[in-house]
Length: 54
Image (cartoon, rainbow, N blue to C red; front, top):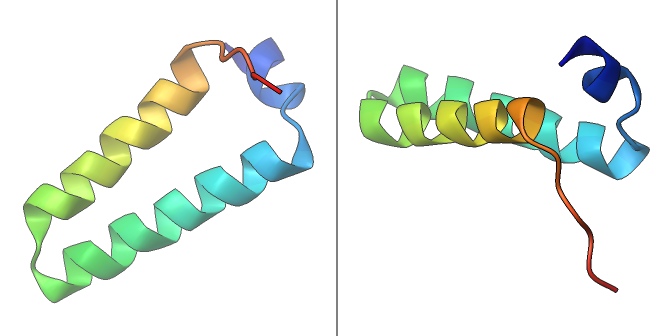
């Protein structure tokens, strides 16, 4: 998993950062379900490979 994270492209990092900020904001707003959903999407990005379609 760490090798996969280190090989992320810039747009992958931007998306993960966006999800992380969204998770924090939603948590502070009290919308715990939305924060949990953002956390799950971060985990999916980190744990599984994605195949890009052009």
